[in-house]
Amino acid sequence: MIYWAQLLHFYQPPTQSPAVLRKICEESYRPLMNVFLQYPQARVTVNINGVLTEMLHDCGYGDVIDGFRQLAKRGQIEFTGSGKYHPILPLIPQKEVERQIQLNSGTNRRLLGKVYEPRGFFPPEMCYSKDIVSSILNSGHEWVILSGIACGCTESWPVDRIHYIKEGNKRLLVLFRDDVVSNRISFRNLEAAEFLDNLKYIKGKKENIYVVTAMDAETFGHHIRHWEELFLADVYEQIESNLGVLGSLKQSTVLAHQHSLFLENGKMAEEVQAVTISELLELFPLGRRIEPLASSWSTSAQDLAAENPYPLWKERGNEIHRLQWEHVDITIALVDEAMEVADSGEAKRFANIARGLLDRALHSCQFWWASRRPMWDINLIHMGLLEQLRAIVNAYRAINLSQADEDIKRDYYHKLVAARDLRSKISDRLFVW
Image (spheres, rainbow, N blue to C red):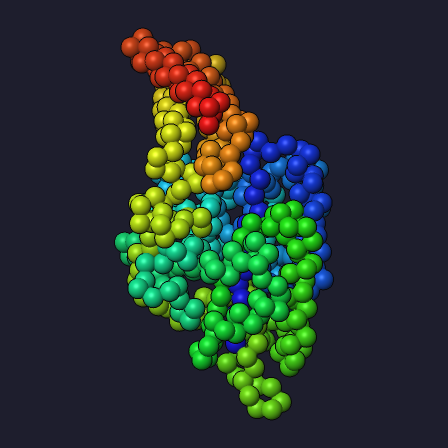
């Protein structure tokens, strides 16, 4: 058997416009739901960041949320944990990592209900470092998905066993994305029949293997028009027609007896079975302890050689990235101090506003749009700065209204001024970029 575990990543930034969200729902999210409903044997692991779940609810797209809920009740999808506002977890303080994970869980449980029971974790942009492991484990997750390039093995990423990271006396299982296959699907370089043949080529002479693909959900229908039909539906159609005996059985029966099912001619069925990532844990043996490399799903071998693990969000030599992260550090410092010293009703009100605004202000898109690999956009970079500025203004207001020493107020006023200078420097550089 060849087990195909697909992960689709649903996300839109908190700064997304209602018009674009509507377009994405019409072109991608609803058509994807229809494909999965049309093919009951389809299985997919879904990451939906809480910021998007909330936007869908608030903007009147409850039918999309209902679609997720229905598919989960049918056993066709499972959910993963993540950070609510899609921050680059290795680049923010641990307390912010833990807060983002908790916010994501709370929002999705409130809006998706009991079907939201994630066993696995999707770090935004698959940005990984050893520093985030304890936060993932402490939030109750069993496994994490990483880019294939993160595999610290001497060989390629595994396809017949599941390696793990050791943290104290706990294990975090690691599933690696097949970067090659995933990217070929994402850029429409692989048709359905070729994809299935490719899986059989990867299998070679092994008895049973798994292949994990992962990409943005918006790839289907929004980035590539009708790709959910031209690729996904076609793949599911071919799987269904090729399953033969297997296709007539319930999914649970297939998974329970996958090693003893034979076709009429007595040969083992070398077919593709769509599964969720968590189902792989029951099908394949434990591998060995590994130390994955700090990386993302956009990191190249050249980036790793240059010790540049997160090139689209904090690239060595990118002056805009450097200034953006200095601004983030000041924003976090101001909000932390506001939460610490706010001692009156009015001061606490502004501190709590700043705290909520900081959560939004950590979203990854503002750095992606400053990467110039090749994309960049002055407006979207500024929108991220404005989110941070709102947090700064409310945080300093809380500090100024508190009973903190005048020396503290003066020190944080200087930080506010430094942040203003950083925003000016970023603007100046963007105009000549």
